[in-house]
Length: 159
Image 1 (cartoon, rainbow, N blue to C red):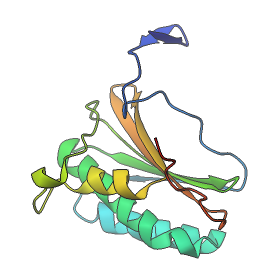
Image 2 (image 1 turned 90 degrees about the vertical axis):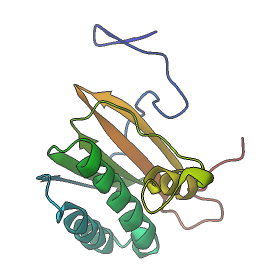
Image 3 (image 1 turned 60 degrees about the vertical axis):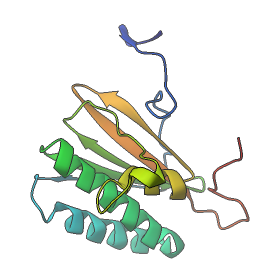
Image 4 (image 1 turned 90 degrees about the horizontal axis):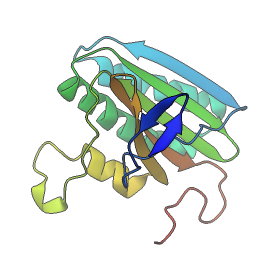
């Protein structure tokens, strides 16, 4: 068991892992959304504006897609207010979506995916790293994309 701030957390699982600190320095944005059908589109627009402002045009489409999937998951499963947080520095773009549902996300196998249920499959496939941590009674799901432009930057390392 891991002990932090006087409380105990369960041992880390493969994707409900301990929370590595986000990169600090270059840029930060945090926006809250009500649980309404337009939240995913609003989050995509916020991601596009922010990444364009930071000059991270190469990551925009992937970040928009993955944020949209995480926001949609939060809307479907948590039905609560959610928070999108973006941070960028040191060659890493980190995107986080926090909601009130404490259940960790599940990556479905390709054979299980139909019209819905592809969100975490896409995160697993496209993000350099991703994870989830308890956040009070809820959770925060995060992913990272490389921004440094060098070969292999932000790509998943072979296991």
